[in-house]
Image 1 (tube, protein in one colour):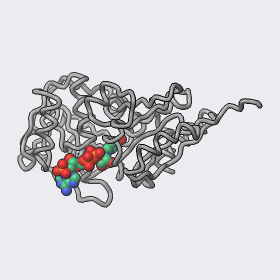
Image 2 (cartoon, protein in one colour):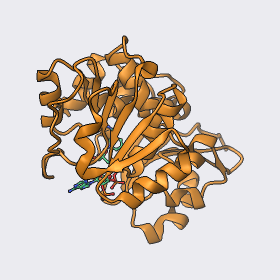
Image 3 (cartoon, protein in one colour):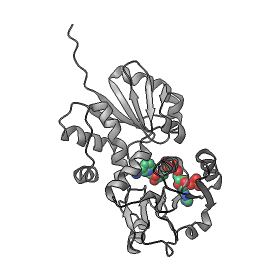
Image 4 (cartoon, helix red, strand yellow):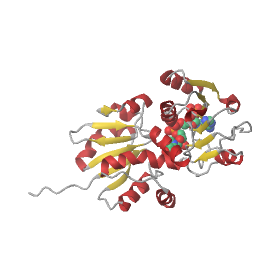
Amino acid sequence: MTDHPRIPLAGVIGHPVAHSRSPALHAYWLRRYGLKGHYIPIDMAPNDLPDLIRTLPRLGFVGLNVTIPHKESILHIADIITDRAALIGAANTLIFRKDGKIHADNTDGSGFIANIRQSAPHWQPSAGPAVVFGAGGAARAVVASLIEVGVPEIRLANRTRARADALRSDFGAKVVVHEWTQAAALLGDAATVVNTTSLGMTGKPEFRMPLATLNPRALVTDLVYTPLKTQFLIEAEALGCTVVDGLGMLLHQAAPGFERWFGQRPEVDEETRRAVLLA
Ligand code: NAP
């Protein structure tokens, strides 16, 4: 019998997953580089996760992206967890290794930093404190990566204070927790300001943070990318700040998985952005 090479399969698991832009992104890269492969959205309920994940490699899957609500629970299934995924407490990229082991990584933080560096090359993380709004799963990746690139202090404010306190106890003394209702007072000397809450996303309430004291030299970024330019970014830009939207983070966090699964490091450029926006 001839041993036919299998066409590599990858995908994104979530619940729900229909909204994900990842299938459009990976399909675009596969086309652009003329590679064989498919990338499929997989809606998987939490109870089915352990059994189905173990089945996928036998069907030809070489890996997966992981999204809400599985990013944390996937760590109980993985055999090998990178240090950064362990520190963040969540994974977004799985590699199904040839020896049968599941390797879990978190590329959200590196994607977050790569997006800022590409869009605002003059950004100096060490120039002053960062203010981070929100303390959910994405905030954990953002805080870990800001510490890694040398931000001297992270002022963290979240509606539910206990979540911010938990982050401080995991990430240490560089993280200083502040009251959500007083957060506008933190902005005066901030060099970096990040919205990691889901506020401002289409269908959610607006993110209403008084920005009058914002330093015009601050770099302001939002993880929300629908709409591409949130009201928060529009207001910060009007005050003279450099602003970076969240779409680039989505693209950059996806690149390492694509490279491992399909063997080609993809470009994140204007064409890629356009392909995902038009899809
Ligand atoms: P999550 O774990 O559910 O956290 C949601 C965050 O939003 C929490 O801090 C939550 O505060 C806050 N929040 C929600 N509703 C609020 C409200 N009405 N008032 C004040 N705060 C509110 O979600 P996540 O995974 O961290 O994702 C957060 C956002 O980042 C989402 O919009 C997601 O799409 C986006 N994201 C983007 C990328 C990208 O590549 N651009 C990657 C990951 C995530 P409480 O703790 O008080 O509930």
